[in-house]
Image (cartoon, rainbow, N blue to C red; front, top):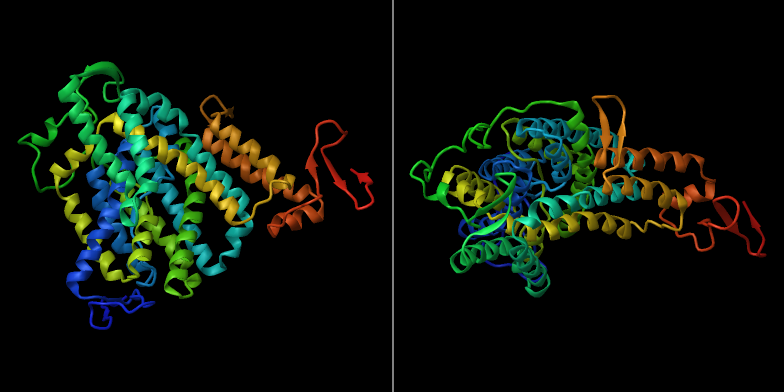
Length: 486
């Protein structure tokens, strides 16, 4: 792609109904300002999720900027988007951590998932998106996204919330209130604002109430400690400019490192690929609608570019990436879709990534604050699955959709396990995803033709088969004359 943009009009104003196309830009002053807005939009989630996954937030910010530049080049500048940290991997990473997995094993598993995502993108590019829709219809995709989010409920209950329940409750309430009470751009960054409010409140609570005795995630047990610990921030060893730290397990430092591969852990994060395919597809469709251009030919490239970004970031110990709805919201509000603004945002992110002081400040986020944020975020991830269902008119009166998806979701949420050998066990998200996909296609293959057609075309079955408990057999179909047949 040739780096260059055409100046839109006078570079200062937009007439009613006008938009700035991806290959255009406003004046450089305004473009820098728009780039700064994109940084703020992606900022909160991009460093919150690495914290939750136990990875380095400074490195995540740095690599998000690098990955964004690579993404823009791969899609030939036709899909304006920012690659921030993906939430889809949080559930799988939590499962890896619960089984004693190291940060190197986490990033190694993510790297493999990123490579698979890139391969899926290449397949879509050459074969068309219909291939993916055939294997992963909306019913299945929604279920996988839902089970990834809801599987995380015990992580909130057992790790984050106990660290400071009152701060968690206040932050949760503030995020909910701001997300619906604030208008425009401020409402879109309610998670980031909630983190700032929680940080300040935790500091005030330390001053007013002293230390807290609660679960300390760093120590792995209940201790008496300050909510906010800024020792690393003010330390003379923490410089304003420099590379992110190198991982030091003995010192408890997570920074840049080489990935390590354990295939049992890879299975725990692979379901995130399904979520990312759905997420990227939705984002490309949204941008296409807003820019009034056909971006279907770019769908495979965008998915492959996201996979490449994840591989690149995790190869040095960074966090997985995905296109960000927050930044799409900024474009919708400003009607400026210029990729120049995204190059600016990526450059700013890279500069932040070279500030150890910034990384130390982010890493000092109190556990109680993360508790309040994760309650909302994890639930939102789960409910995005329901959003996929409603937008695609998935009918749960059809047993093809109802029965197999119900089984997969409960297996994931309940962390049900299946012991294959003494050293290999499927459980939680991985087991639930496999059951969801395979059982759905089994049900689809065994079902009568009219049920398959209804499931394939999102049709509702007004008087069709339903789950009955008192009659013999599982499915009954009502005829117009009132007779029933099995």
